[in-house]
Length: 224
Image (cartoon, rainbow, N blue to C red):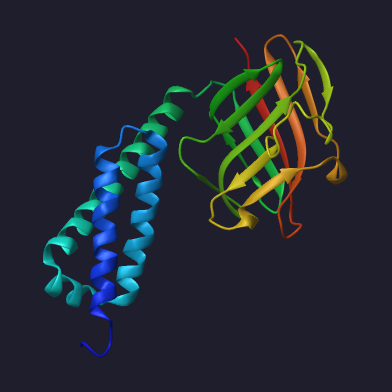
């Protein structure tokens, strides 16, 4: 076993992990706490790469238990965050709202959660099924659009060069972890049009992903 890994290096890495854990625990600076947590994760990956789990548990049993507890706490925190996000979506469902897609993915989802935000006159709308919904070609997770200088009822043509709109605000998201799961709108793909009435907003966009696959989306959001 001693010929396979340098135990002095392993012990040094373990000491660094403990130091970062202490920093995360005692600091009152949120950014430093998060930085310490990220450094811990890097050190954990290093330990797992250097030493098999069984050997680490034998040589440093208290460290192995601490890392396992840390993993469990992170998983519980992630699960709680997902549950909170789902509860928010449930509470934000609007009667009569819908997302309709065609092209790379095709289908329609009704009764979706709607989130409105405004920032210096820019209206941002995010629509999400409570849970990802299977459609032909994938699972639909979300869609969104943004209108700069929103003034109420009227027709709005989206443009690429509007600095008031954050990059990626006009999009469709399918389930997946790679770049191809997110489809963004660009003026070169086709028009982006938002029509607002007193009681309804409808947006139509043509979006593409990193593989140049296309999804055409229509979002319907009732007002009031």
